[in-house]
Image 1: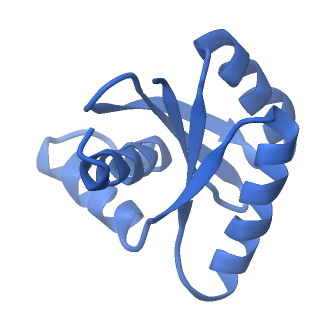
Image 2: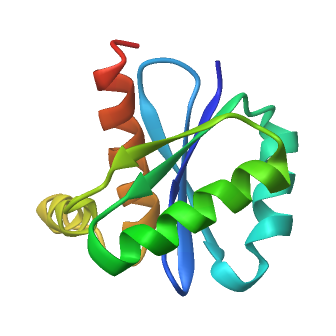
Length: 122
């Protein structure tokens, strides 16, 4: 089963993918054209399911709306996964290995997906 994870942000969206027990960062797309970008990725990668990161407060409401709209656009099953602190964890990991912090949203999506996979014992 191929799973796409989405780290929704107001400006950009981080993406990660898995085809087993390990999540890999896939990239970042601009929020303004997300429908076309994610739909294309789902078709090209033959995605079976989507996992959308969800945080707390006002942003959680925006992420919930996005998740429902995304499921409608791509016609795929989806689940929410807690993403609390994944961006700060991603930045810390990138600094730890000496990488320039620019792809933190894709790394965050990979952390979201890895937590999801671990919780499902994939």
